Image (cartoon, rainbow, N blue to C red; front, side, top):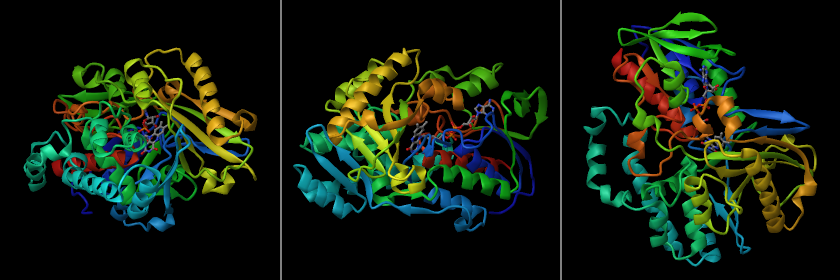
Length: 495
Ligand SMILES: Cc1cc2nc3c(=O)[nH]c(=O)nc-3n(C[C@H](O)[C@H](O)[C@H](O)COP(=O)(O)OP(=O)(O)OC[C@H]3O[C@@H](n4cnc5c(N)ncnc54)[C@H](O)[C@@H]3O)c2cc1C
């Protein structure tokens, strides 16, 4: 990367994965970068804890598109092997259905199609065609809608933009994901499998548009991976890289205000002091960024009041037994997916038969649990926090989850839980300031959602930028890394 001849002092508020990615890129460009983080540790949602001999990744557990992490080491001209290692998974996820169906989703597309045609009522060719269409949608839209600001005119003046406009009807934006899947597949179980991808950005398959059928492409084409040392190794390695690039981190430093002067960002106030900067980047969720840090500025109410994505309820369980039928990622589907999403997004509560996701990192990293044991990250999708009685919801959900897992695994799980910690929307919000504890900012439950996300900049305040899961492109780790990239490119283009 070419160094700038006009180095600036850039403050980044928050050391979530997007904040660290932006910090690395801006530092490599030659800017002085200082990060202020409210917590005593980096990574935000991408963190971990160890207790009673069990290690748990607390937040993200599915790692796709490692190329965006590789890119950060490339721009920093540092060998990734010195910091970070990861391996590809042959089996993406094991699926358990209430009717006793078991399906192992292989990473290899041909193997996946073969397994699907033996398990479900489907031709291999139909499955392979679905993946082909999934790739087509991704190729047509990713470089445009995910890798560039959606809110800059120049984004639309490219060949890619024209191509996407001409093919807009084939993108599936006028149907829902479930509507699209039901047209392709007859077998309800396979429809449920493909509907599940709506949850990758915290949405409902019955509301999110059919273009989300591009998401399986991320798993099937780019693959899923496991970082050596677990997901937390992503935070640790990027934190080390950022420091080696010259980024300064200040922890236990909750920023109170973004200061402005003549419609320009001027710095921040933190720990009772003012710190000046040429540029400020907020990696804080966009709602508290406006409500707490930009109190004197008019907030974009339409954007901030968009319905939130789902949140999560997680039981971190130390399990005193090993289950050979389980892998790193395991899904135990609900019987009635429609009722489950109706509960989450319309009734704002939790269905009594939720889909349960069990992540077991000790399958890959045996030291994550004592000998003969497993560390179960047991998660269900729940609504964001709107003041529900979470204690009651948790008590009921715990019982229902245990009953379901015990039924499908043929073993009383309750007797095997040696250790338990719980994370719910309230604690997700208090740990990272995510509005209502939503995992991905606003939901993508309508076809305009991407355009309704907050841009990565603010037209009325110069030198103020935003990155992270609650702004464009929004979503999980890969998109957070991309939002860090977009911010660095916007700053580079201006200087
Ligand atoms: C349980 C769970 C499971 C998930 N599963 C997956 C998954 O499998 N795959 C995937 O890709 N994604 C997953 N996600 C989503 C993923 O974790 C997020 O998209 C991503 O980590 C968000 O990163 P971010 O940069 O937006 O910032 P965050 O991680 O939200 O961090 C923001 C940071 O800003 C700090 N901050 C806030 N306010 C202030 C302030 N005033 N001053 C200073 N600092 C402040 C916070 O302390 C925090 O460290 C999951 C999330 C959760 C919670």
